[in-house]
Length: 296
Image (cartoon, rainbow, N blue to C red; front, top):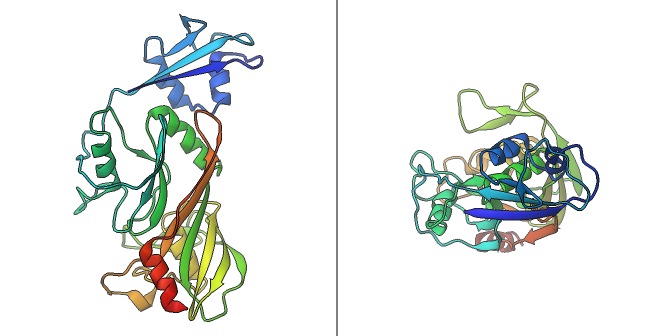
């Protein structure tokens, strides 16, 4: 896979490297581009990163992807793709689908599905906003190392805005809106479960009630951080665990065929290469809507 990106230098920069960093390129992106002959071309000539470009110069960046995720088995699984271009793909992930292959989940992940979808291309699976196995909704995947590096920088800067929907237990005591600012750490003696702990990493979740139901509420959540199980841990911590949450809601401990009712509703971010504003949204899945109807 090869992607060519043309820039017109818009002002004075100390070096080509300085210009690329202003576009969000990471240091590792720049190191990778140095490996390729004609990876950086200034006005038609192969250039060095420390060269100083002039205003209105033409800078061509060639992104070459020669590798594949050889350890991920390509498996045909139907995908609901909401957006795709040369640089990214955004998938509406169903429930009961992990992002990555793992023990006992070697052939049913989103990674398996995308490796099959891009089976005739050099494609390395690089997911930017990972979702839990049972969380539905939008997940963005970078199609080459450059878009991955820039999007990961956006995630670190909290510039990818993520909005979720959830159904939580509510006896009417949940405030109309609020912010949970509580650090999250791994639960002792487990690789999976998390808990609020002063020894953990800071985590911030903002929520608001969209609809009061009978014994539950449909809420919207926005994240300022991205800790493992953050929404599930925080809502349980304030006494309003997610409906169907077999890890953090004692009502569903040891129950089969349930899932936490959590949905990645929308993503908004600047496109890593073109710089355009992107807003993507997907509707609630069928089982989510059915549970809302049950509570009405």
